[in-house]
Image 1 (cartoon, helix red, strand yellow):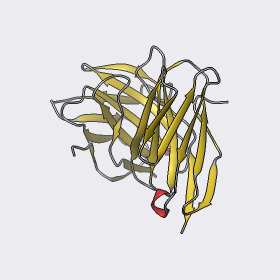
Image 2: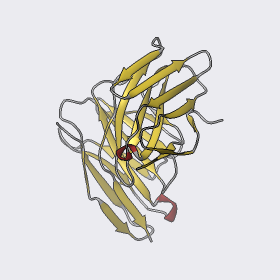
Image 3: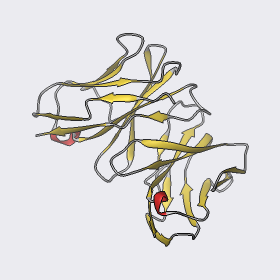
Length: 114
Length: 111
C-alpha cells in the first residue's frame, strides 16, 4: 500500500538555524498538510496546500514557516530561524480530495531545537 | 471547550471489554474522522463519517455522529491488547479544507 514518507526521522538543530523537513506524499494525492505535535499534546494543524499554493494556515504558521513543492514528488516545510518552542514532532499528510477523504500520515520528523 | 475534545482523556480496560470514546466539537462540519496513534508514530485513519450520516461500522469499530449535539462516539468492541493506543477525532469545519484534531483519548487494554 502506498505510504507517505518523511525524512529525516530525527533532526537536531541549534536555535536560530534553518531546518527543512521533507515529505513525499502519496503520488496521486492532491492535498498536502503539515501538522505538529508537541510531546504528549494535541496534534496541531499548521498548513494545507493545494495546486501549488497554501489553502489555509493556522496562527502558528507565521513568517518563520514556509512550504514548497519543489518538484512533482516532494513537499517541504522550512523553518527559517528555529526557536526552542519549535521542538516537536512534525507530521506530513496527504489526501486525495480536500474533504470527505482520509488523511494519510507519515511517521513524522522529531525536531529538537537546542 | 476546544474544537475536538475527547472524553475520557485516558481509559484502561481489560481485554475483551468494549471501549467507548467520545468527541465533542463546536462548529458545523463536513465530516468527522477517527484516527489512531501508536506511541511515537504517525496517525492512522480508522473511519470517516459524513455530516449526513448517523452511524458507521468498520470491523470492530462503530462510530456515531450527532450533529445536533455536535458529538461523536467511537466504540471498539471486544478489545485486544493491540488496540492500546491514542485515539483522536478530527473534524473538517464546513467551508474549510483543514482537519482539526481533538485532544485524544489514551486507551490501554490490559491482557
